[in-house]
Image (cartoon, rainbow, N blue to C red):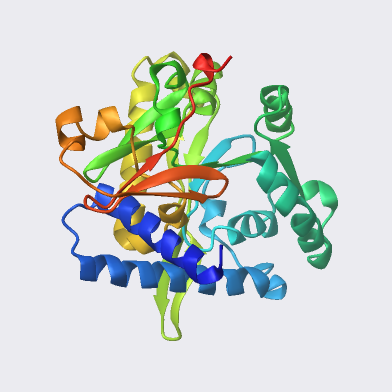
Length: 312
């Protein structure tokens, strides 16, 4: 597939995702939003590449206002989020990031180079693979050593992940005209054993030279005192949702996951059989090693899911 075709498919997928949550946005708004989202990604990539080590070591980010060591901190793929771990390390925290295997392979070497360039010891930042069977034990060990545990809450709403057998361990997040899911295991663990939980993200700040991105004030999600409060977990989830919504109101095009979230559902969830028989053209294609059908008339994506239980 050539680059132009990939760009067209990415644009279609992005617009389908966004329109699923913002159905009232016009085609003009969607096109403008997509261009702004692309501009953000290019600018954030440059910020990541040209990371100002000498400047950030002299900054005093707002995270100093909270006692974050020995806690779990949730954040989002928002703004130039790859700068957040470096900002926390530069602020003096010993950081443990929980990431997927693919991110671990991609980022671990980069983080090591960053620490060396900042003149900091290698143990100031470590990565744990989220799917590792020992990850919970390693997280608890890191917390016992007063490390900050950073976790990116990621939207994950594909047809293959919405089955009732997979909803355990997920939180359904209402957003716009639809919803997506966050993994909830760490939040439930923190509540059960009385760990402090916060949420932070980089926020755009306007200066005379233009917008810059800084670590915003942390939100207290859970405290050790919430351990015996049966309502604390529900309240914590509500706080996280409100925090996410407020973040998106700042600039909804600064959220990277619009191009990755895949806002689609199975045919049985999108429409009944009668609607499917009204006639349309379905275009098959593959993207990121997955198969999809694109409904040209309704501008919706459907993921092709194989039912492994019926495969002999």
